[in-house]
Image (cartoon, rainbow, N blue to C red; front, side, top):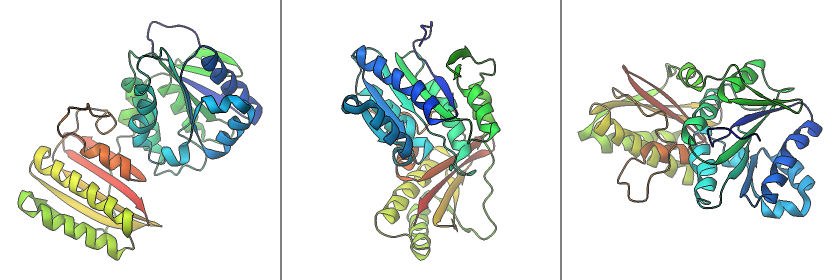
Length: 308
């Protein structure tokens, strides 16, 4: 990758075949290893197997993660995958990561969170000596996804040529996908304040159990609801409304209040070791299969999904 004034480098790799995928990723990994740089690869399972086989013995020197598991919820990729690896190597010079958070089977419900994630990477790593290469299967992905990739990446690599993106505008993507979240008419609802925090948590847990959530998944919901309802009381005007329903094989829960999230990286920034509080939304991202957020002057809604 060419040097730039900004030490953080974030190119999108457009590929159309396995050959193009390997041609764009394997040299990137090998160059990092040759330079003594820490290298991680977080891509969907099929591509992970492809890279592992092509790298051979060198694969043992790379941290390999299946992004369909580690990054199932796009909101936890920055704190739990990218930052986790980069922060583990603070004195090792440049860090290289291949991160592929968007693939053809991502749903329309998931995609807005994916696009925002790619845009927010640029804020999360500004000033750091990190290169994050993001492959995009342009033969399989919707043209809108490819267009958004040009807006979220300052550099695009296509047909082996690296070019500055003239469409780069990550803030526009964050704003575009800050979409209102309208619950279905049949959602069960519970309005709460500080005195009803215990009641609203029991309400959510009971409804989730009735919908088939159990064991660790039910415990995850209980934790997420506790964090979000507390945030509403402390930071969201003192009151809020919880709604819960099902979609396909998932239980969906959301908490709305009158607060506004001003920090675009809220919930995506690992807390400092001595930080007291401020982990609520991060915990939601960590336990949920998907989390969507809409925020503005009129209030904030956090919606999360858990598979049954």
